[in-house]
Length: 243
Image 1: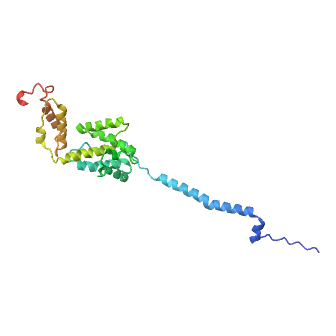
Image 2 (image 1 turned 60 degrees about the horizontal axis):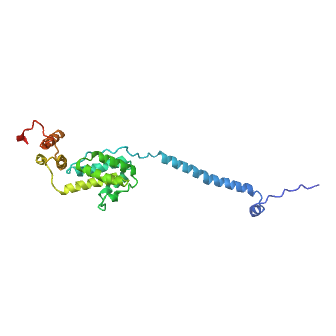
Image 3 (image 1 turned 180 degrees about the vertical axis):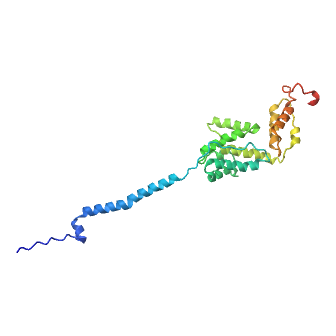
């Protein structure tokens, strides 16, 4: 009787790998496993992280910085506190911006050249400059315009922090005078010759130094009476004894 042939066992273990029998499928399986364990979760994780980042609300910078009007000397300290909060809140990055605008107070700042850089707030710096120009007035505004003209010749413009520093210096100088004006100082103003602009400058400087500023219609009346001695502005009803 013929004996049935026993099928030779497939090689296993180290010999199996040496013969390279079935290594193709084994390698393929390993590659697929590695791909499944590493590549797919990594991609899913990155996608999830991006989605979560997109879900976070992005801070939006205000289109306009609204400031209080130009303050008087006694009210400047309180105005300054409010000013910094208004600038910070308009930035959309309040903490960073508060430190940024507070740098104007740094004692190491010796001039506007030290504040020429925007420090990642270029857009806000430009908006701040525009807002400050809207509240500036009088002789101080005239001086600022002179500086702006000089900067423009160099193809530059004064930014918000530079204008803020100039304003701080203006009030620092005014406070050093130590004099707080009152209603009597306003009454003592007089026109010298026909120098109307000089009278207006003195009038505005006095108002800035007053603790209690009269209403606008009272101020207008005082300015009119003070300037009425000018030959070209004297009203016909004003008698000589009333000068």
